[in-house]
Length: 299
Image (cartoon, rainbow, N blue to C red):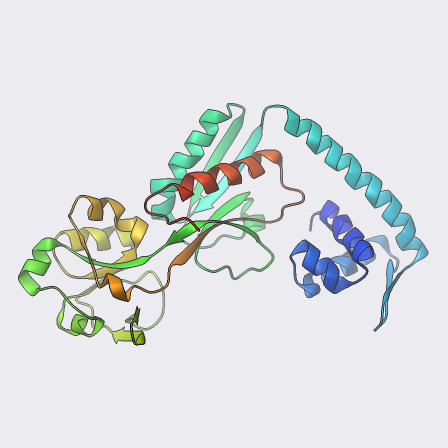
């Protein structure tokens, strides 16, 4: 737990008058605010706020700490403002999924380094959602809904799940007109996630689920795309994973009227208040750059 963050949470509780109001201001859960306050009290060795069912009352120890906390945070903010006035410097560590990171985040990070010569960068490519604090990351690009409500997200757009096949395959086996037709087709299944062998679609009559009997299963996306380009069957992937192949005609999009809802693309950080200027600048830069990509629809 960041010690400055503990002080900021404590002051938010005092300024808003309740744990719930502080949680809303900080965009955290009430339970997270309670844990932070309790941890600070344990560190100080004294009760800082008396909690009753009707109100909160600051103790003498709490008043003394509040005065010191305001001075500490004011000094921190002044130091940050002074640092932000000069050139950005320091390191930015970023995580992203393998394919999206290699194709799109790596160019964005390199362009950011070109614009800020005193900043260094590290890109960690991993299809698992790494814990930012445990992995020492500043920013992570996540595709999909966030499971960790403690993270702060900046939406950069959205991607789609697309059904594709090669023209050679369609010439040989025909083009499916509706999801149910896939039962008669050869399916290449990307087994990168656990769960039932099925694809879900959204049609005019509501959700549809198609159970699959794949002809080929692969636990990595790039060979799945290669197999589809070779005409080995129909597959479903994220739109950004086949953007080049769709653009040059090696693959054709199918059943577009039945595509499921778009999936958010988000840049996440551990917090806003104590974010270094270089990290804040990178998030702004990356959100704008990703939003301009044809493979990522604006949010």
